[in-house]
Structure formats: structure tokens, C-alpha cells
Image 1 (cartoon, helix red, strand yellow):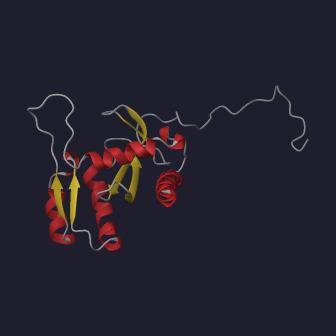
Image 2: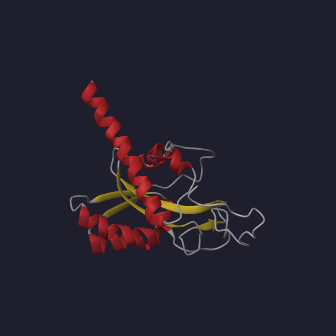
Image 3: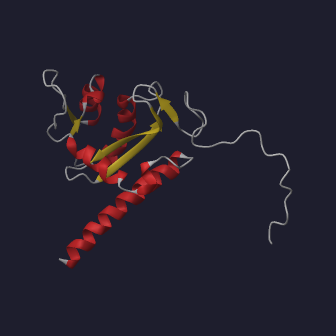
Length: 179
């Protein structure tokens, strides 16, 4: 026995840190509770190409007041422009409207087109080209490890997302080689 015998009646620690701790507000490990969507964990901000393959990812705390979609985009877009200088057009959902569009055009020379949902149409409507990111999120959720947010640190969670996308792309390449 490497651990030795432990006394079962020894006092246990009074507090444990786990995935359910700290539901309200943001914690030091980058998790939070989004009261609008009623979810616990992190928000994933993705930039995909037209096929749906992941170009960039940014993880923020789930608390709605911490980082908005526009604030996350202002962090991601300069890095996107530096890494992929040939990209000139972006499509985004309604959460990215406002001054981000004019800032991206003036500073980064990126044309951001916001695809908004019509207020007249009730129920679910597939928006043009908006489904690409939703499909990518669906592909990522097929990975068992990403279905729940098990990671403590945002960097390890980001690494698991990149690993999952690498697995998906490798399977596609292997399927083409066999065909």
C-alpha cells in the first residue's frame, strides 16, 4: 500500500471546490452563472470559416454582465486580422451589432454583416449562413468531454475544444484518404 492506512473517522475538509460551487457571479477560474440563459459555466465565442472549421475561440465567464459578445469580439478580431490577413468579411448574429461594426471597418478593415432574425416570423427560422457556427457548436457537443464543463481552468477547456476540432478534422481527412 503506497498511501498507508487512513483513519476513516478523521475529519474531512469543510468546503470542497467543484463544478457546482460559486453559482452566482464570476469566479477566479473563469466560470460564472448566466441568469439570462440559466446556464452555469463558460461562454464560447467562436470564429469559423465558411465550411464551419474553427479559426479562433475565446472563452469567457458565463455571467452575462462580465463580458458581452461585442467585448469578446473586440478582443478576438485584431488577433484574427493578424493571423488571417486575407479575411475581409465576417457574418455575425444580433449580439454583435452596434459600434463594433464601425470599429471593425475603420480600424481593422473588416466588413461585419449582422444577420438578424425577423421580428415578424414566430418560432425557429434558419438564418442564412448563421447556421454554420451553430453546426460547429453541434459538432463540438458530440465530444463527450465538452457536453459538460468539467475543466477548472479556461486554458484547459480551450485546449479540449481545439482537441475535439482536431479530431473531427482528422476523421474527415482519413475518410477522404480511404475513399
